[in-house]
Length: 132
Image (cartoon, rainbow, N blue to C red; front, side, top):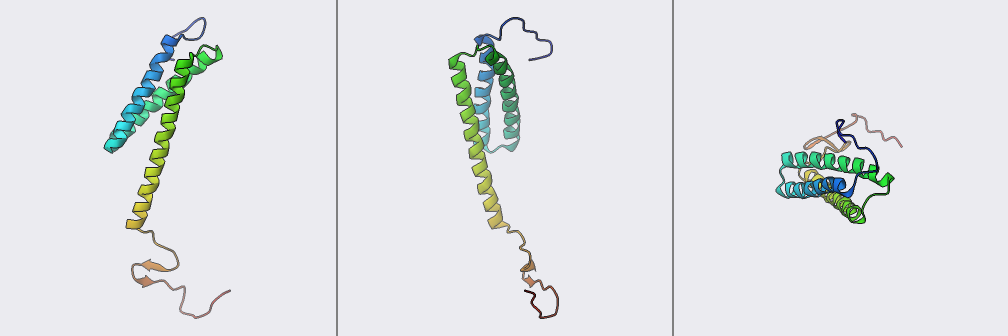
């Protein structure tokens, strides 16, 4: 709720709970489109917008839930949006893991103890002793 807004009386009616749900649904659609396009700037902007919409919805729904005035239809839509957020998070985690594996295959990390520079063997010293 904005500092200038002031609600008196019972919790917010369904008409005031609808806009945050619509904002979440629109944010999810925009984030999905940005993810499909691969535009990192758009992804960041849409993710931030969705985060803001989710925070606003939590604020409004928490207030309404305390009064027991969340309509079942809006509760279902919010739960569905939560499922979509979880699905997008999982898809992004899989894509990140896949990208990490591809980077590791293309640019292997230096392995300690075997080779320091490409083709040059590292030796701990010139002596031939082995510690057990």
